[in-house]
Amino acid sequence: MRVVKVVAVLVAAASLACSSSGSSSSNISADEPIEHAQNITRYRGPELEVEVNYWWAETHFGDELMTLRVAIAAGETSSPVRLDNIRVRTPDGREISPMDQAGLHKVYFGKLRMELIQANAWAPPSSRFMGTRQLCAAWFITPPDNPQPRSNSINPSRSQVCYGPLIFEVPNGIQPGRYVLIFDLEESQPRVPF
Image (cartoon, rainbow, N blue to C red; front, side, top):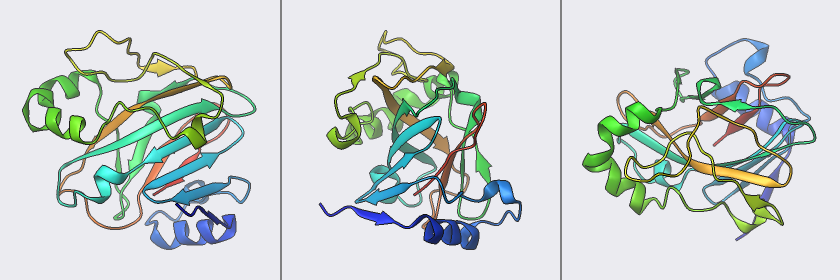
Protein backbone atom coordinates (compact mmCIF):
# COMPACT_ATOMS: atom_id res chain seq x y z
CA MET A 1 0.00 0.00 0.00
CA ARG A 2 1.46 3.31 -1.03
CA VAL A 3 1.12 6.10 1.52
CA VAL A 4 0.86 9.56 0.11
CA LYS A 5 1.87 12.44 2.33
CA VAL A 6 -0.28 15.42 1.62
CA VAL A 7 1.30 18.84 1.82
CA ALA A 8 -0.48 20.74 4.60
CA VAL A 9 -1.07 23.76 2.37
CA LEU A 10 -2.94 21.61 -0.18
CA VAL A 11 -5.02 20.04 2.59
CA ALA A 12 -5.88 23.48 3.93
CA ALA A 13 -6.89 24.63 0.45
CA ALA A 14 -9.04 21.52 -0.08
CA SER A 15 -10.65 22.01 3.31
CA LEU A 16 -11.49 25.62 2.45
CA ALA A 17 -12.91 24.63 -0.92
CA CYS A 18 -15.12 21.91 0.58
CA SER A 19 -16.21 23.75 3.70
CA SER A 20 -19.35 25.84 3.73
CA SER A 21 -18.19 27.66 6.85
CA GLY A 22 -16.25 30.84 6.26
CA SER A 23 -14.69 31.13 9.72
CA SER A 24 -10.97 30.70 10.18
CA SER A 25 -11.59 28.12 12.94
CA SER A 26 -12.78 25.67 10.27
CA ASN A 27 -9.40 25.63 8.49
CA ILE A 28 -6.66 23.06 8.95
CA SER A 29 -3.55 24.86 10.12
CA ALA A 30 -0.28 24.27 8.27
CA ASP A 31 1.41 22.74 11.35
CA GLU A 32 -0.96 19.77 11.51
CA PRO A 33 0.46 16.91 9.40
CA ILE A 34 -2.12 14.70 7.72
CA GLU A 35 -1.36 11.39 6.00
CA HIS A 36 -3.81 9.67 3.69
CA ALA A 37 -3.66 5.98 2.79
CA GLN A 38 -6.33 3.73 1.32
CA ASN A 39 -9.46 4.44 3.44
CA ILE A 40 -7.30 5.67 6.34
CA THR A 41 -6.36 9.17 7.45
CA ARG A 42 -3.72 9.78 10.12
CA TYR A 43 -3.37 13.06 11.99
CA ARG A 44 -0.52 14.13 14.29
CA GLY A 45 -0.95 17.29 16.34
CA PRO A 46 0.37 18.75 19.59
CA GLU A 47 -2.40 17.30 21.80
CA LEU A 48 -3.62 14.33 19.81
CA GLU A 49 -2.71 11.64 17.30
CA VAL A 50 -5.67 10.12 15.44
CA GLU A 51 -6.21 7.37 12.91
CA VAL A 52 -9.57 7.30 11.11
CA ASN A 53 -10.50 4.22 9.10
CA TYR A 54 -13.49 5.23 6.95
CA TRP A 55 -13.75 2.11 4.77
CA TRP A 56 -17.31 1.33 5.92
CA ALA A 57 -18.54 4.87 5.26
CA GLU A 58 -16.88 5.01 1.84
CA THR A 59 -18.48 1.77 0.73
CA HIS A 60 -22.00 2.42 2.07
CA PHE A 61 -23.24 5.61 0.43
CA GLY A 62 -26.89 6.20 1.25
CA ASP A 63 -26.75 4.52 4.70
CA GLU A 64 -28.03 6.77 7.48
CA LEU A 65 -25.55 5.42 10.03
CA MET A 66 -21.89 6.21 9.35
CA THR A 67 -19.39 4.02 11.22
CA LEU A 68 -15.78 5.18 11.56
CA ARG A 69 -13.05 3.10 13.20
CA VAL A 70 -11.07 5.61 15.24
CA ALA A 71 -7.85 5.30 17.26
CA ILE A 72 -6.62 8.06 19.58
CA ALA A 73 -3.28 8.60 21.34
CA ALA A 74 -1.81 11.66 23.04
CA GLY A 75 0.46 14.05 21.18
CA GLU A 76 3.33 15.88 22.88
CA THR A 77 0.84 17.14 25.46
CA SER A 78 -2.34 15.42 26.52
CA SER A 79 -5.93 16.49 27.03
CA PRO A 80 -9.01 14.45 27.94
CA VAL A 81 -11.20 13.68 24.93
CA ARG A 82 -14.94 13.88 25.63
CA LEU A 83 -17.55 12.26 23.39
CA ASP A 84 -19.64 15.45 23.44
CA ASN A 85 -16.63 17.39 22.08
CA ILE A 86 -16.42 15.31 18.89
CA ARG A 87 -18.40 15.91 15.72
CA VAL A 88 -18.20 15.29 11.99
CA ARG A 89 -18.71 17.99 9.36
CA THR A 90 -20.52 16.64 6.30
CA PRO A 91 -19.80 17.77 2.71
CA ASP A 92 -22.78 20.16 2.90
CA GLY A 93 -21.43 21.83 6.07
CA ARG A 94 -23.69 20.24 8.69
CA GLU A 95 -22.02 19.18 11.94
CA ILE A 96 -23.23 15.95 13.57
CA SER A 97 -22.39 14.59 17.03
CA PRO A 98 -21.58 10.90 17.45
CA MET A 99 -24.02 8.44 18.92
CA ASP A 100 -23.68 7.85 22.66
CA GLN A 101 -24.24 4.56 24.50
CA ALA A 102 -27.99 5.16 24.89
CA GLY A 103 -28.32 5.87 21.16
CA LEU A 104 -26.32 2.77 20.29
CA HIS A 105 -28.49 0.62 22.55
CA LYS A 106 -31.66 1.79 20.72
CA VAL A 107 -30.43 0.67 17.29
CA TYR A 108 -27.84 -2.00 18.06
CA PHE A 109 -29.93 -5.15 17.99
CA GLY A 110 -31.26 -4.44 14.51
CA LYS A 111 -29.23 -3.90 11.36
CA LEU A 112 -26.42 -2.04 13.14
CA ARG A 113 -25.16 -5.09 15.05
CA MET A 114 -24.37 -6.97 11.82
CA GLU A 115 -22.88 -3.84 10.22
CA LEU A 116 -20.51 -3.36 13.16
CA ILE A 117 -19.45 -7.01 12.94
CA GLN A 118 -18.90 -6.73 9.17
CA ALA A 119 -17.01 -3.45 9.59
CA ASN A 120 -14.86 -5.10 12.29
CA ALA A 121 -15.60 -1.91 14.25
CA TRP A 122 -13.78 -2.89 17.43
CA ALA A 123 -10.63 -4.10 15.66
CA PRO A 124 -7.32 -2.56 16.78
CA PRO A 125 -5.80 0.22 14.68
CA SER A 126 -3.11 -0.35 12.07
CA SER A 127 0.32 -1.48 13.22
CA ARG A 128 1.73 1.68 11.64
CA PHE A 129 -0.32 3.77 14.07
CA MET A 130 0.17 1.43 17.04
CA GLY A 131 3.95 1.23 16.91
CA THR A 132 5.08 0.04 20.35
CA ARG A 133 2.09 1.48 22.21
CA GLN A 134 -0.27 -0.65 24.28
CA LEU A 135 -4.05 -0.78 23.84
CA CYS A 136 -6.17 0.92 26.48
CA ALA A 137 -9.43 -0.68 27.60
CA ALA A 138 -11.81 2.30 27.67
CA TRP A 139 -13.85 3.68 24.75
CA PHE A 140 -16.94 5.86 24.39
CA ILE A 141 -19.35 3.10 23.36
CA THR A 142 -19.35 -0.68 23.62
CA PRO A 143 -21.70 -3.37 22.35
CA PRO A 144 -24.67 -3.57 24.76
CA ASP A 145 -23.93 -7.26 25.31
CA ASN A 146 -20.26 -6.62 26.23
CA PRO A 147 -19.07 -5.56 29.72
CA GLN A 148 -16.00 -3.71 28.33
CA PRO A 149 -15.40 -0.39 30.17
CA ARG A 150 -16.93 2.66 28.53
CA SER A 151 -16.78 6.32 29.38
CA ASN A 152 -17.95 9.69 28.09
CA SER A 153 -14.34 10.85 28.44
CA ILE A 154 -11.03 9.12 27.71
CA ASN A 155 -7.52 10.21 28.67
CA PRO A 156 -5.15 9.19 25.89
CA SER A 157 -1.46 8.85 26.68
CA ARG A 158 1.73 8.62 24.62
CA SER A 159 2.12 4.94 25.56
CA GLN A 160 -1.47 3.79 24.93
CA VAL A 161 -3.96 3.89 22.07
CA CYS A 162 -7.70 4.06 22.78
CA TYR A 163 -9.83 2.82 19.89
CA GLY A 164 -13.29 1.85 18.74
CA PRO A 165 -16.11 2.97 16.51
CA LEU A 166 -17.73 6.37 16.31
CA ILE A 167 -21.21 6.16 14.82
CA PHE A 168 -23.01 9.16 13.34
CA GLU A 169 -26.65 9.40 12.25
CA VAL A 170 -26.45 11.15 8.89
CA PRO A 171 -29.79 12.58 7.74
CA ASN A 172 -30.43 11.72 4.07
CA GLY A 173 -27.62 9.13 4.20
CA ILE A 174 -23.87 9.18 3.58
CA GLN A 175 -23.04 11.17 0.45
CA PRO A 176 -19.76 11.32 -1.50
CA GLY A 177 -17.51 14.24 -0.62
CA ARG A 178 -15.12 15.56 2.01
CA TYR A 179 -15.97 14.89 5.66
CA VAL A 180 -14.00 16.29 8.60
CA LEU A 181 -13.80 14.70 12.06
CA ILE A 182 -13.45 17.53 14.60
CA PHE A 183 -12.21 17.33 18.21
CA ASP A 184 -12.65 20.26 20.62
CA LEU A 185 -9.76 19.94 23.09
CA GLU A 186 -8.49 22.25 25.83
CA GLU A 187 -5.88 24.01 23.70
CA SER A 188 -6.58 23.02 20.11
CA GLN A 189 -9.25 21.85 17.67
CA PRO A 190 -7.81 18.98 15.61
CA ARG A 191 -9.57 18.39 12.30
CA VAL A 192 -9.12 15.14 10.44
CA PRO A 193 -10.40 15.25 6.83
CA PHE A 194 -11.47 12.05 5.10
